[in-house]
Amino acid sequence: GAAQAASLLADAIAAQRKICIVADYDCDGATACAVALRGLALLGAQHVSYLVPDRVVDGYGLTGPISERVKALGADLLVTVDNGIASVEGVQRAHELGMQVLITDHHLPAVFDGQMVLPEADVIVNPSQPGCTFESKAMAGVGVMFYVLLALRAELRGRGVFEASNQPKLDALLPLVALGTVADVVKLDANNRRLVAQGMQRIRKGAMPPGLFSLFNAAG
Image (cartoon, rainbow, N blue to C red; front, side, top):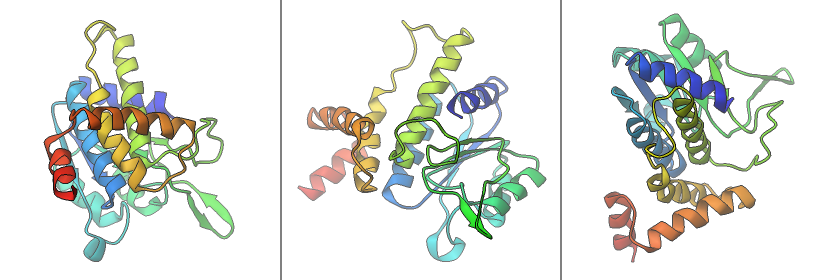
C-alpha cells in the first residue's frame, strides 16, 4: 500500500496537481494533518490544502458533501488521514467528481451484512485492512501518514529527484508523530515505542514546532 501511495503522490507532485488533506478532528487526526502538510511541502508538493470536518455539522469521516467541498477547493487528489476506511459513499462521490483518492487510516473497515467492505479508493494504506502484511497493527493515523512520507521520499530518490545526501529530513515531524500516537492511546508495540521515543528525544531538547512548544508551556 505505501509503495503504491508513494507512486501516486510522486506523480501528483511531478504534475503539480492540487492535493487536499481531509483530517479527523481529534489529536491523532490533527497531528496527522500537520505531518501530511509539512511533509508533502518538504518533499516538493506546491499545492496542498486541508479540510477538517466539523463533528456536529458534518459527522464523521469522508462523506459525499465533504468530497464536494474538497472539489470546490480545486483539488485533484484527496488524501484522508486518520479516517476514510469506512467512507464508501464519500470515496464514490470523490471519483464521480473526477478526483483521485488516497486513504491513510488505522481503523477497521466497515461491515455490511457480516462482510467487510472497503471503499474503492485509488490506494488504501491501512495496517488494519485485510491482507495487509505490515507487522505493526497498532499504529495511529499519524504514524501511518509518516510511513507514507518515508515511502514517498524513497520513491522520489528512485526517480532521481533527491539523493541520499541531499534528501529532506523528516525527523522534524517526529514530535508530532509522538504526540498523536500517545494521545490516541494506541498500544506501544516496538514500532510505536520507537516513534514515540524518537519524538520525545526531540521534544526534551526543545526541537519541536512552535505550537507544540506553546502547548507544553501552557500545560506546565
